[in-house]
Image (cartoon, rainbow, N blue to C red; front, side):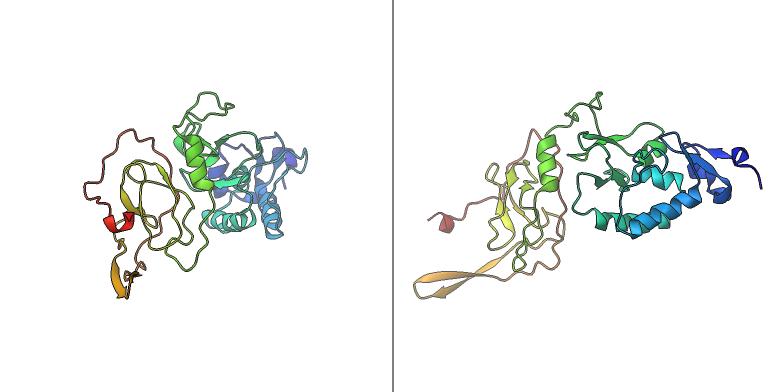
Length: 274
């Protein structure tokens, strides 16, 4: 067996292609400068996650290694990474300050510095051949030349951040159950909330655009239709539509629209104004 100082050393740059050789004969250099072996590192990382631990400090200097670096150094296969990222997502579901999925590649990214809004995705940087950073709040590519600045350079960053992090509606009996409590109008991007009563159809207070709060207008939506049931001196409206095929849209990102069109089909129901 070769002495330890004669074993091949693989840096961070080329460790992704090193899996063609035996992991037991490879040493890799971490960002902190210390050396480790992929096979033992992988076993150690898996063991920590399996026992509910989601931090990865260097065993020599205790400097924190981010999850993406651990995957790279330990030569995780795609299947292994997918399996353990699912476990990490479950472990960190209440810790959105430390773990989020990259908006570009959808791999899990760990943020070590809670004060920094500019975060690098190692996987994207490697694939693109250049530094790729995104804003931790609005989840869009970082545009500000100063990475330590509190402004990412994207329009309406704080509004998008709110749309991405606001609570979900908890009302199992209505169709907007599990939708965000705040949406952006698909027409003019004005912030809108649902009253959590009746059907999913809402009307934007700014441009009068009517849209489905559940799917935001994705093809296949069946807007609510009502029939009026007369009962003596008052009317009862019954929802007769089925929203089982209406897809619940995900969270939104503000695009910064400056112009919008007024919905030509909008007509205020006079009965509802009385």
